[in-house]
Length: 131
Image (cartoon, rainbow, N blue to C red):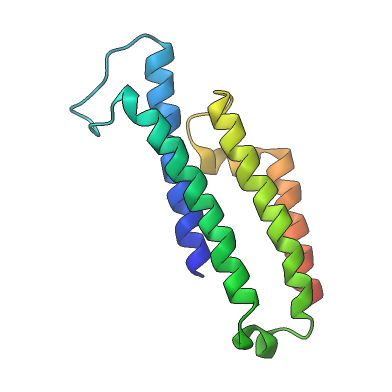
């Protein structure tokens, strides 16, 4: 699904943001030889991550509004419940990274965080109800 592209782009930006803030907090110089990110890039990285997260939800809304979904699910209207769950999860990730509470890798965080796992299970339950 195309939403996945935007979700993983947002997570990649979150990872770069986390790496850069860790260097900044440790008062290390910018490492321009590695990925050429600068401390001044933090604001735009955060904005791009938020925009990508919201785009993921928009793409998902367009998907569940399409005619194709009606042929794949008996109760596609339940898929709308995924939108607030996904919005909460992505917003939570962005707030945690902004507060510098995100560990180094957001994917590992998502796979080990109890709130993220509960939200993933809730989304799976919605999908099964929709099928």
